[in-house]
Image: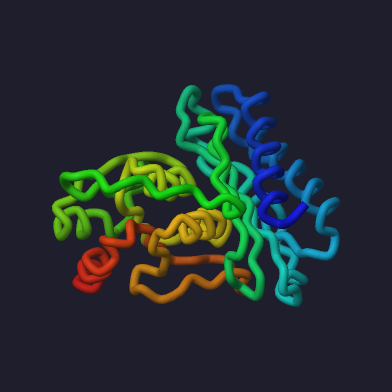
Length: 239
C-alpha cells in the first residue's frame, strides 16, 4: 500500500469509528479514540516514520526524521459534539522534509475522503460575489478586511478541513485564517488542496513549512487559483 492509499484508508477508518461512537457533547471521547486508532494504524504500517498528533505529547524525535505524519484525529470537536452537524473532519498527512507530500481529509458525515492519491477535481467557478469561509465561532482578524475589500459573502462553518474542502467542492471560493493554528489543523487540507490545483500559502504568499520545532502556524490562505492575485493584493493592504 503506497502512502497516499494508506493516508486515505486510515482517515476513512477513523471517520467510521467517529460516526459509530458519536453522541451529543462527545467530542473529547472522539478525539481520544480516533487518536488511538490512527497512531496504532500508522505505527503498524510505517514503523520507521515519526508522528505529530494534536492529541499526543509532541515527541521532538520527529525533528530528526525526514518522514513525519501529521494528524488531527478530530478537526472540529465542537461541531462533532453537535449532531447532526457535518462540518468536522479527520486529517492525515505525511510531510517529507517539511513539505506536505501526502494528505487525506475525511468528511465522515458525508461519507467522503478527499486525498492526494486521487486528487479531487476542482469545482467550476460560481458566478457572483466571492464566498469566504469563516469560523462560525471565532472569525479571524482578517475576515472583516477581506470581506470589505473583496465585497465577499461570508459562509460560516466549523472545521478547518471542512472549510478547505469546501473550496475544492465549490461551496466557497476562499479560506483565509489568521490568529493562529497548528500544523495539524492545516497540513492534510493543504496537501489535498494543492493536489486539486488550489493556491496554498501563508497570508503573505510565502510557502507553508511543516514539522517545525514549534508546530504553531500563525496563518493560512487557500483559494481558487484565479483569485490568488486579488486575494493576496487585498491582504497586503491590512494595516
